[in-house]
Image 1 (spheres, rainbow, N blue to C red):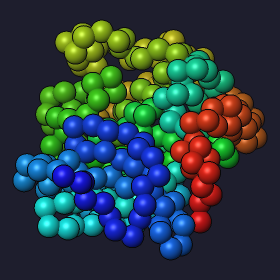
Image 2 (cartoon, rainbow, N blue to C red):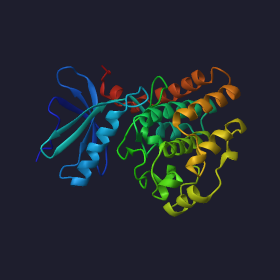
Image 3 (tube, rainbow, N blue to C red):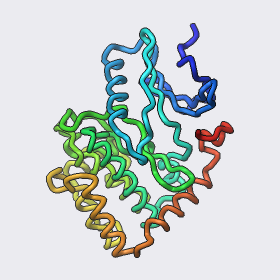
Length: 293
């Protein structure tokens, strides 16, 4: 039996597939506008359907240039789809895989863009809970964009889900998720960008859990001017982290300007843009011959 599709769009190519469903690149049949459409797996359980609707609601609360935009949630009988902005760029995961460790200015630029996107989510009362390199897209201009609010929750909600490599101690303990939870994950990725390594290794779940819960924050592994950012952002107690992503941006700007000069961000953006363009074959819109409307 043919799978349902949002009728006014034609599918161009599949971008990814997982347990929850599949994401495709599509274009509007009349206007030609490119979009990304996430389809929930057919026959999904009621709990999965509720979570899918929650994802759309969470994404719909956030309106910021550092976050991929929601266009609409589509329901057709038992079928559900989320139509959202198609960001033409490369996952930060791919940049790290090929180029890490990055120059400090580039790592700082990604952290700042991510914190600005997270701050917009936090201002809307949303905690992402799954910040990781695969959920950050870097376009050709070097400005990072945050995607995938699939397990986002209202601030104060349960936090026992996430990607183990970047989960905050409170997530491992099943405590409420707060903006500080996202700050922790973003700082873990910042550490990875600077060193080429995950903060607590790539071992099994138990060893990773033990690292996040009990091992010292590895601030000494990075350049001295950046150690306070790692120490604060990855503090074990959420109360010892910056009170918000926006507050952390202010501290980051101060540290980066003092260590790398007033033009640090423009230099970092050029490095990221170069790394992204070198991987232009992975840009979904460019590969499909589409241009954003």
